[in-house]
Length: 239
Ligand code: SF4
Image (cartoon, rainbow, N blue to C red; front, side, top):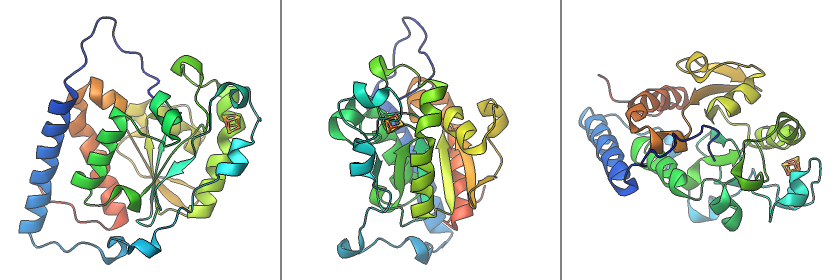
């Protein structure tokens, strides 16, 4: 879910073309990395099926949560996806309609773009990372979360971070970044630096929904993702 309003009457880009463009750019990056003979880090080798776990799942406790009014308004809670085995946790803002319908964070178009970033860009499988939102319940009409709702839900995210112990947190959007860092800064102020929260490196980048509306920012997002890849010890093509 995005917290940035679309311009009235602005036509959304063709999602298939957008994903194809991003996929081509990321595939080119992967080819360049391979040509330079960069070995993939052992720590992110694909897990055997039996190793796949879900360490950031809190479904029963969160489903019972009524710490803010959203607990009575949502159809169901949305906790997390992935194992986090690669040492990275992506944090979005709040579930959207498709997330809620499937009880899965980043289940819609923005989620497909995030999957492409993870798989075509970072060279990981989606199930190797962990993905969540800072809020576990969908606000009505997909409105922006209220500060008191975010404050009430923050302990769930902190519990997930404690369970997973990620080396890197990638905050998708200024809202997630500011919550993790206890700041009140713009995305421009948060991007391009490595922050720290709960022992994890924090990198802040654009929300995928923003990238669907403003594809020109994908290049900047890719710089942030490369920063996260360096912190994870993943191969990054040299310029
Ligand atoms: S949004 Fe968070 S704090 Fe509010 S009811 Fe849902 S799980 Fe509880």
